[in-house]
Image 1 (cartoon, helix red, strand yellow):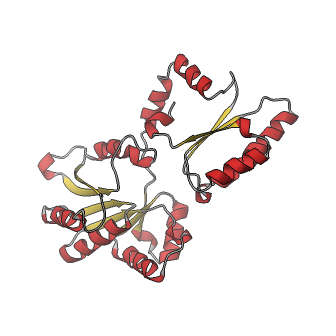
Image 2: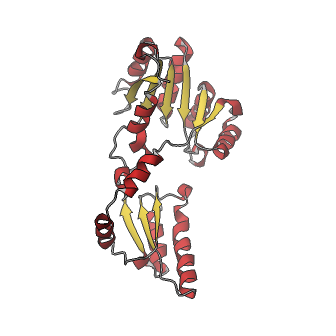
Image 3: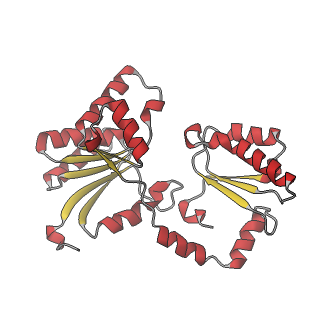
Length: 261
């Protein structure tokens, strides 16, 4: 059901960036905002520059004065802090999306104390899975009823459509460019190359698959790694030590609009 535009609920959507050319899930924000605009009058605030040079507090405050009571903040700790202060003074709700498991990072006492304070100030924490909801609840003492589950939004139907419309000639051109033989099985890892994302398991996975397939007389697989990060050098080094460099292709960051190919 679509409401009349003037009667629609208002939502401030705060994001670090808004660009379809992104290599991260931020690339899906434009489509996501279009989707929720069916039922919300959305005001987008994109963070830029450093505080206070970008007048970030004033932009959020002006949104609240303009009648926007609900703030949806994606990932930004400082935006969650500012929005919570504004909501505390003028009323409103703050939904703070975070799946970053911040307790895994070393922080000084003041940053850690402020982080814990913000988790108490927000109206709802929004995270991607039930297991994460449990961890956030345990670590920051957030009541479970104050945690919402919402995975990163991706239009799967659109991706299926894009896949089905890739012509065979394009497939072959891409395979040739990556030196992938005909009918060879391919594994794709598309993510940040960090231990938290499991990237450090890739060399061992590739080694076990290669050993298993050789024992059965099956052609080897090719591992495509789309992404970059702190584990890249280690992953490359271990794959080389296993003598499997010809089985892996490091693509670096690939824009999400190209990942389908």
